Amino acid sequence: MASLRDIKKRIDSTSKMKKITKAMEMVSASKMNKAEQNAKSFVPYSEKMQEVVASIAKHTDATHPMLQSREVKKVGYIAITADSGLAGAYNANILRKLNNTIQENHTSTDEYTVIAIGRMAVDFCKKRGLPVARSITGLPDQPSFANVKDLASETVQMFTDEEIDKLVIIYNHYVSAISQVVTTNQLLPIEAVDTTTGTSSQYEYEPSEEQILEVLLPQYAESLIYGALLDAKASEHAARMTAMRSASDNASDLIDGLTLSFNRARQAAITQEITEIIGGASALE
Image (cartoon, rainbow, N blue to C red; front, side):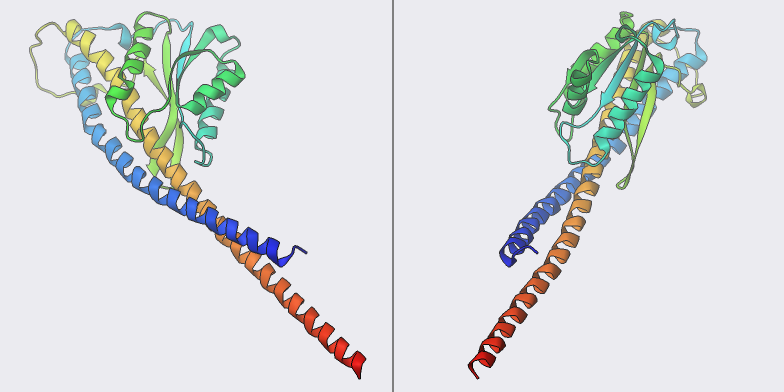
């Protein structure tokens, strides 16, 4: 059995760790609330962009390469992860999905490339020798569009220049504070434009519909990437809050068990001392 001093040290160290995880839980909860608001605030803009694109697609014959499928020779995968761990299975689920998708659909590294967002994704690709076309790390907890504009623009340009023929994004979709779902969406070519959402009003386009789509569609694709990043950030903070809460609960259980062991050891020591005293008194009689 461990000595009283050893048990006491473990109780003290576990108590200090519990204070840290509790503080991290509170910080993550605060960040999650802000990130959730950011993600929800972005939805009206994204929906309006889709409505405008759908309106043009519904009432005109204008076409654009981003709306048309072509032979897929190379696929680009955007993987959104965190820069650090301590978030439960948040990063592992995304990276597992990325790896499984690649294994199921490709036999050569020439058939795909990765756009890595977050240090975990970058390190994962480096360790496994996966090709990385673009990467970014060190994003703030509440990223602005300016933080990812260059990456989003360059990624969309890769499709326009036919460096890739399909763009897929993998990230954790925020459902609630205790639920995040790994989601895979095709961003390019844009196939999910719902023409039923377009307004019924007739518009006159100036300049032409083609010129409007030329400007609007890249912005729309970039906004989808940014929207997914906001969603992923809310999921990250929620996952970290849940992980830290679980760590705090486990620390409490461990402290309770150690305290019980400490009391038992102390009682055994007291009983031993009493027995020795009684034995010594009996020897003197």
